[in-house]
Length: 452
Image (cartoon, rainbow, N blue to C red; front, side, top):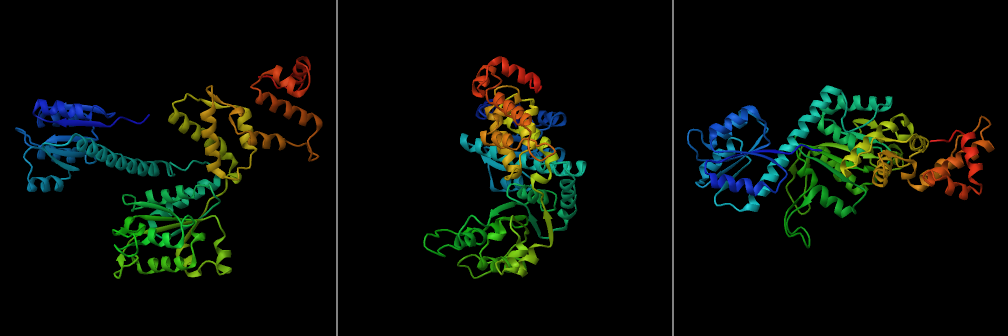
């Protein structure tokens, strides 16, 4: 389970201090509260906090001093200043010293709760970025891309090499292979990691909406444009823009995108002044872009601008040795999410998964495991927790003999195994379905070693 955020309240007025404790008691936080700046500094030497709420005016050590000392000792900790003596100068000074926000008394309860939530979210994102960087350095890998297959490990090493280079990247891969995960990994391992990562599907919008989303519009640029809208390139300035399904981008939009890359500026719809933007473009496609270029359906100049470095993600069918690792990863993820104590996967279920071709790749496997965890009644995922069509595919694709066709015994064994799995091991019901008596079924179970 995720760690509860730690909050320190520093307030010399006991009633005001208790009031803040009460306001934040509805949140799932660990809260410490003290009545002076001196006590606050003692605690800060012993414990790490995600957020400090401090009064400004206090004896001996005031709120400004607490703010400064927090930033010295725990730089990533957020600080919210609260005071009944608000002035413009003190607010400006607090923000200069790194305060997250400045709240004058009397304050609104919901305002305090909202600001606390925002400050903790900012701290959480800082922690996530720091941990990702540490993982990347320590493991030499990508923590959110699971796989030990040789092709995947080579891909990860390439990502780590090119991430700092700041060049445009083109990712090729079938649907569901994890193209956006690789794009995010490039972003998080790059110097742009503290700025925005924006993902956009080029095949999900009409040409007009595509231009509006990417480049934005000026107020009154068209009917209904009641306010200025910044496009995604502006929003991601300094960061990374991920353009998924780039092969579906209309030709006229390809021209506009090429201009953005060449001029490093965008022109909003209805605008006259170019707006400078500094973004790294990571594009992805499940199509053969080179073939589209040859057919005149994709601009060659844009193709070469995007394809400074290309990455190929292998389909799951080419990295089947990763299936057990991925199954355990998704099983743990969804078991924790659903509060279930699931410890493993049955051999039968794993055999079915290992023999399935996964046309939907890793995304399909994740959906299958999420469903299995949801349906599971015990501490082990079973074949009965898989979709029926998957179990039927397995039955139809039973292992064949050396002659290339299944023998009668192989067919009978696999069919009896499948019926037993469908009935949850109920031999009476299985015998009825098979059209034999229980004694005959028992003999066949012994013959084919299907016990357990």
